[in-house]
Amino acid sequence: MDIHSEKILILDFGSQYTQLIARRIREAKVYCEIHPFNSGLASVRAFDPKGIILSGGPSSVYDKGAPMIGKEIFDLGVPVLGICYGMQLTAKLLGGKVERSSKREYGGADLVIENAGDLFTGLGLGSTKVWMSHGDRVEALPPGFKTIARSANSDICAMRDAARKIYGVQFHPEVVHTPKGDRILKNFLFQVCALKPAWTMKSFIETSIAEIRAKAGDDRVVCGISGGVDSAVAALLVHKAIGANLTCIFVDNGVLRKGEADKVEATLKKSFHMNIRRVNASARFLKKLKGVEDPERKRKIIGGEFVRVFEAEARKIKNVKFLAQGTLYPDVIESVSFKGPSATIKSHHNVGGLLKKMKLKLVEPLRELFKDEVRSLGREMGMPDEIIDRQPFPGPGLAIRIIGEVTKKRCDILREADAIVLEEIKSAGLYKKMWQSFAVLLPIRTVGVMGDERTYENTVALRAVESVDGMTADWVKLPYEVMESISRRVINEVRGVNRVVYDISSKPPSTIEWE
Ligand code: XMP
Image (tube, rainbow, N blue to C red):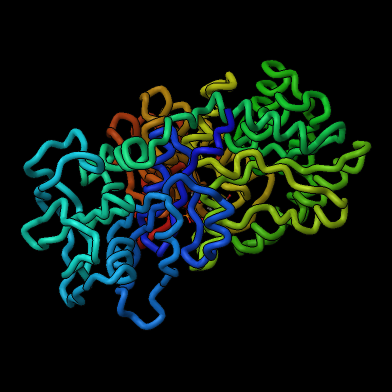
């Protein structure tokens, strides 16, 4: 079965929750994509969705330059669900009245359902908690619509045109603060749009393998492996499709963690018999980094050097026509978003030049997936937890965790300290519970005593944070015993360190990495 034939289109009007809508729909095993609100009717038609969701957004429908669509979208014969701004827009376009309000309604509210059935199937009549975040509200229904729920603050909290299958809800069903929101979205998918839950990782693997085979044919593909979960899963999927025609290149840039290169190579080679070329380029990278203190320059140097080393290695392989990459859906959404790519997304290795110079085409088998889907895809293909559950690690590696100049000696000190941090965090059973936990090497030396001797050595900062997506983060309240054993072991076992401190800053206003 073609898993892409039954899909939902989400038109994005700029809500911070738009990605959450997509997550919820994917979790319900229905494929969906987010497109900018202004992609145009022809593109909507071409996508051929079985249902359309109009997202929320920060604007008022009365704002000058507020995001608008043509009302022809309601004539496609496809069910539509407008959420918050999406509902107000629906009301305005179809002839209802939206009241401009200066006061925002923000937070929990009681939704009183007046018409159980389709969108509210299984919720019963009566009240249920929902999450509100809106300024304007619908004051008068457009012709053909009926109210199906209200709240203390608005008489029209949910509306429907049963004949045309057009719905609007003032609240946000996609957030966890709307406990029954999941059921409401599922009702839209399964009751209203009559979809089936067919989007599973198993079906995704089958479809992707067929697509990769059709695209690559008998040509060869190269893929850069970083040690992270995205590139490993992308490579494994391509390997399943074309086997020995895939060559993976793993560049050891000298700023990797202890034993990392060996581990990744061993796993992919032994368990999956993949073709891996490991290039030890440590000396090259460290030479270029000599004397450099500015983190942005470190990033540029490492990115640029990576591309050069990768190219030299890729040129040794005959008939290479494709470059496989582990680009994920959030990167794709960012790059097509009408808001423009956000500054918070970290730049990827700049492979644009490489593609041009070597005349390569891209294979990006994970472009449709969110991070947790990539993890379940990896698991489904038998990838070990050790790779799947890895905490994120920045591309420029230890270079941005060594504050000041990066030297081989300082890399070695940090590598040892970092290995102890990870060992202790893992043995305390905390590794998977946090976003990141690592050591930072500071550019200061302080006095200590060891035995009878005075020492004048380095300070290591310990950083452990909880986060959902890396955009915001809070420091982890680590148990004292764990901090104690980390500190004791680092100071005793790592030569050159006589002090360990704990970072208790959250993001914002701090960042996760120190740089
Ligand atoms: P910050 O330090 O900005 O980090 O709070 C947020 C997340 O991004 C990771 N990070 C990077 N990842 N290249 C990367 O691939 C980079 O240059 C980079 N800088 C930060 C960081 O580890 C955290 O997960």
